[in-house]
Image (cartoon, rainbow, N blue to C red; front, side, top):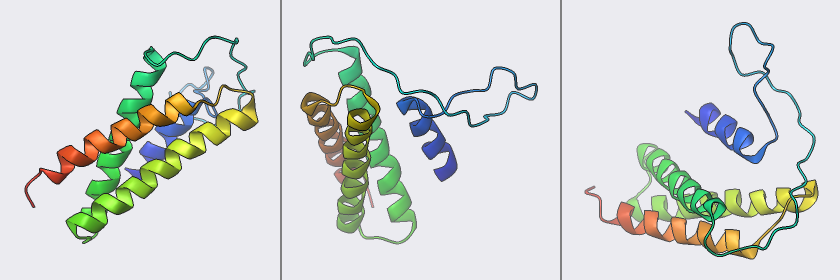
Length: 127
């Protein structure tokens, strides 16, 4: 599960791609050149923002589930999952900054919104 999550995040960020010449259709690492996005206005409502929201909510939920399965209390699980989600979100923006992408405070705001909504929903689940 962890390997699949890391692979999905790597593909989402554009670091790895599918090898089109692979006969067995497995995922093979292939380092990609950094993408340089054209300079577009950073809007509050855009498809990119929805991706940030739902990816943060997904990371929060998976991290919480993993911590609870490992025996963490509800409070510790929520706090630990929030730390993991914040690290992934900030790491993505730092990666964008280094690779010539478009780092954005608005992206981080949508990540925080996804984290908070997922936390509120997870807090309501039965123990």
